[in-house]
Image (tube, rainbow, N blue to C red; front, side, top):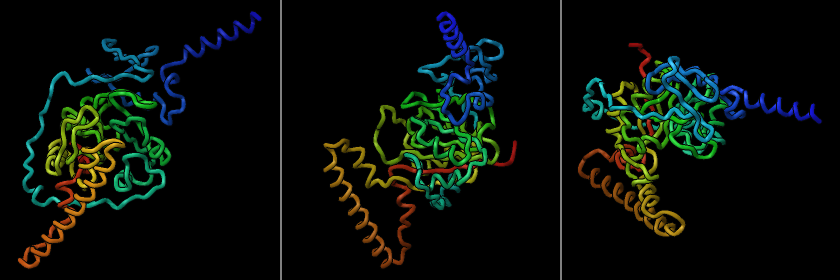
Length: 327
């Protein structure tokens, strides 16, 4: 009996003594040791070391514990630090076109990630690292890891199983040039400074890497914190200002759907959503049809339907490549 008790005590000691890496979720496709290799202190920028159940900087001045079982590296920037080259958007706005990427259809596309977005990442990961900002329940993790991506999810709060680590999108706790892809779906509108977050995405991307996702436009205040809704011009300016090349933007949610969805919520709003969606759809169709007839008679070019969709849609999608040229 005593031997059995001692054996159990030894087992408990071994379990409690497991290191930081092992005590995170054992079913994660990526281990803590892997993402810790590219993590940094969000205050000093120093590499982080494991000390018991916490992460500490090499000089021991900063210590990060866990919140609800998840490493907590949430630290907002102490000050806004914007020192970027001035970008004149006018020529790019004049020549801006809107093109849907060729869709990558898959039966297991997760919530928010549509076939056009999936095409940006590509069909195979081949070991490439992808960071999802605002990962919520990590609903995209299985999709990416099953295709060979090294997926890391961050968020500011916990929903479901939560992120791999808590982090502030304005101050990401990763070293420079540590990811191949950064993904932020329906996140930018919830950030106080999307420009700062985009600059952080550019910082942690390797040369030639891609930042992609979506941003709200013709949609209302939602999820308790909806700060910045952007037009296609605003999105283009933000991405080019922080240094991204080859910016691609295309319309997402049509306003005929986004306005009713926001204005008439819940089960009780269903009849109004249906009526409003129908009326807006009819209005859009009749407006473009009649306008094109009038334009044809006047010898003017027809309405660019894709451009019109982009200029008044509920949300916009984007993909922006970081230059392959190293500074």
